[in-house]
Image 1 (cartoon, rainbow, N blue to C red):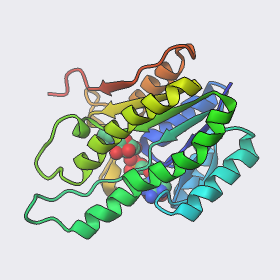
Image 2 (image 1 turned 120 degrees about the vertical axis):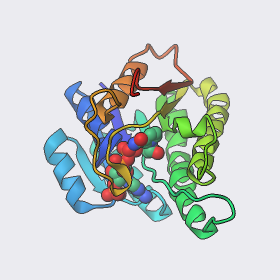
Image 3 (image 1 turned 90 degrees about the horizontal axis):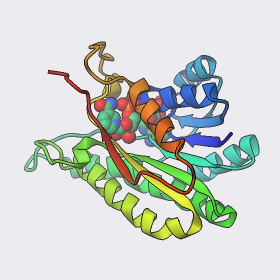
Length: 226
Ligand SMILES: NC(=O)c1ccc[n+]([C@@H]2O[C@H](COP(=O)([O-])OP(=O)(O)OC[C@H]3O[C@@H](n4cnc5c(N)ncnc54)[C@H](OP(=O)(O)O)[C@@H]3O)[C@@H](O)[C@H]2O)c1
């Protein structure tokens, strides 16, 4: 059984993963910013929530301290918290893009930077970075969000090169559209499109591989959403 820390686990893919991990017998701490969402997800999943904004360095240290106090070790770090900002070049609000990178990239790097030394010391650990198919193919209005996910794929490859000798596995997951209702939209209910639970299942499946092997990157598409 493993100890999970999931960022942005109070909704969507992170919450589905928290639920499945707890169901499988793992211990889970998750983060989010809204107290209300945290309380709701704690009730629904049995995981333990912690209010923290991944874009704030002091929150990241508090997250690590809380997770260690609750779990003793962090075996699986899931870097999931992120949001989107879209605009075409020529009309970009570069400050909005910078703010998004603070969450999607710099905060993620800051949190992982605090946890990797612990994993290296123990010579074990799993890091799951949630990227996107937006990071595999450029698209209109994607400079900011797609740019952050392309960056995350590259960062994942760098971490793999650095951490494999310490037995730390780095997985990069690229979901296509998932009907989480993210960005304040209504969650979709189309049975032909992906749900948060589908991505959670794929992550649990990848993590189940024996520690001698890992899947560096995988994409998840709906089979026939057309
Ligand atoms: N949905 C899709 O179609 C899709 C496709 C490909 C990839 N992805 C990726 O999958 C991941 C999860 O997406 P989702 O659709 O599940 O999103 P979601 O439903 O909007 O959930 C995002 C979660 O992250 C939390 N969060 C956001 N900003 C945060 C911050 N600064 N610090 C801490 N927590 C924060 C949110 O809670 P609070 O707002 O209360 O903090 C919420 O729990 C993201 O990395 C996203 O880019 C999503």
